[in-house]
Length: 322
Image (cartoon, helix red, strand yellow):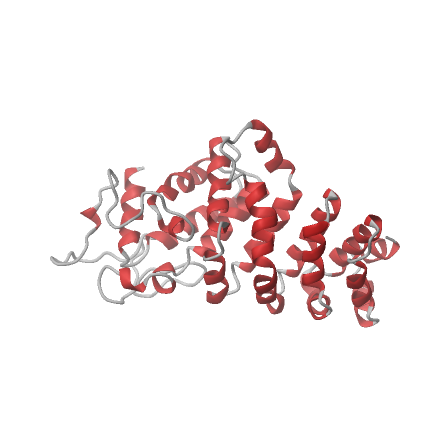
């Protein structure tokens, strides 16, 4: 506990603890039987790996087997503070590029099944005031969605693994829709979820379903976090193109009725590009006062509506309808 106190906000001491090999000892203490020792070890690790300048300590935690140890503790602990601190450590670790793929490989399934799915309420039949209160008070959910948000920016392989992680996309979208329905537009959890979904919506046309392109393999307007193409029109919805007689056109679905070639009950990654996401995203754009949430909502729609993919056309039709 004293080491945790010393490390708070002092990068010099953090670096010294790392240099002297203290991180390995703290990782070993995560398996201690005494809850207070678990709690203080987690707290010290959380402080030691907080901040952009502490990447060496983050790598040291990874090299000491810290990620599996944290997951063991998360799975077995019933202490709320321990669980909050464990997910806080993982959130801090996830900001380091060198550690992101290790977390995805070792922790994604556990975080999804232990935190995201149960705390999101996705498997519940009702969403009541009690669960709304849990959203606001759940530091575990806030920390874990923050971790996922960082992981979703780790590149193509990270996006692919996260999209195919069973229950993850479903739960994130459930949180967004549930919070929109209860006028909870500005929380950190909503911000983390929408920014994660924005990243997972990036380059879908190329990375997920190349066989469903509208015409050839040409891709335009996949903006995401990258700079727009020089060829793009100033419109954020992509370059205007002349209609071709034998290609699928945007008017093949006008935003009303059954959607051609798309499941009535989408699940998993399919939900990312289903037109039903348009309404909650637009609601966040209209109602949220959180700049990061606004950026995430706009970025999600921008990623989904760009290019020649037929589902981009459906998203554009849904935006016009709304």
